[in-house]
Image (cartoon, rainbow over all chains, first blue to last red; front, side, top):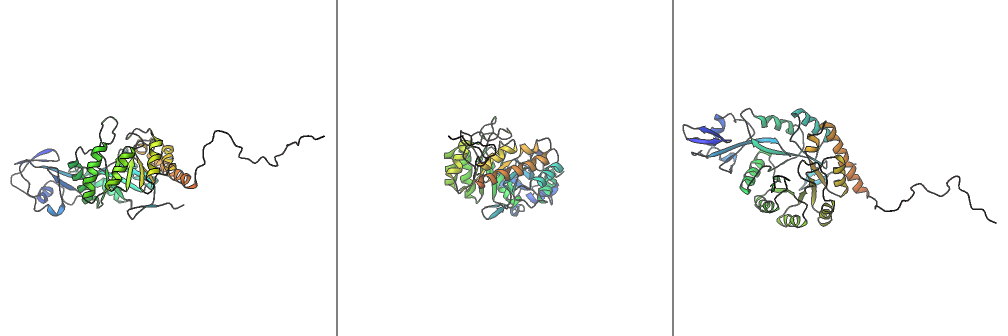
Length: 66
Length: 264
């Protein structure tokens, strides 16, 4: 199935949860927060949230701001 | 003179709030924060790259013991605002959120209607909303009615450097909301603009571009810190009323070379 991770297409062979998605894409241990289809996914829900086909996942980090 | 103030029991030790965007380099940003010693630092959330750009930035900000104020810059709907605020709350461990909803792309004027709707939503979710707003009195009243303790009217459009476009409106807000925390946010270009805002009795000023895009940001940061303090001291001391006529400041009594008129 295909999803969008930070706006870029990503092919997933099996259904995985948000925790695995972050680990497999180099975000493990980093200060990030996640939204799925525009909804905030709290850290506590990473394990229970299974990525679905066509999901739009945003992984954000602190950045410069005014 | 120590002149700290409190926002929801949090002591703020400087009345200069500083944005962190647009600096020539992370090191110049670090030096500028060091020079300004601001009371608050604004930050944002952006998509994280695999290289981890955001982590390096966050390490710089964390090295200072300064409260951060995450913003919602770039959000185009209330749904995006809410999700951004929730992600910011998790990452920065604060309920503070600088609510920024732009209504016009040319002036970057805040959208007052979207601002009210989003404020209502965010306050319902337990956020402490710092609304970036126009200087409209009625909008301010509506935001206060919704529960805002802090109002952040613009001085001029973001990044324009035009200073305080409508001193009358800004002064009116100060007069009408004496117990609210008022911060001039955006449009400030020169240290004198910041001093002028503080002379009106504003609690703080928030600026970014004026420092970040100056020729030497650390020195400009220091200049702004000094200007904010100068303006604040002027406000506290009580600025004299302007008059049309001149009045000599040096006493006239006992001046030398004074000749009494001859009598008899």
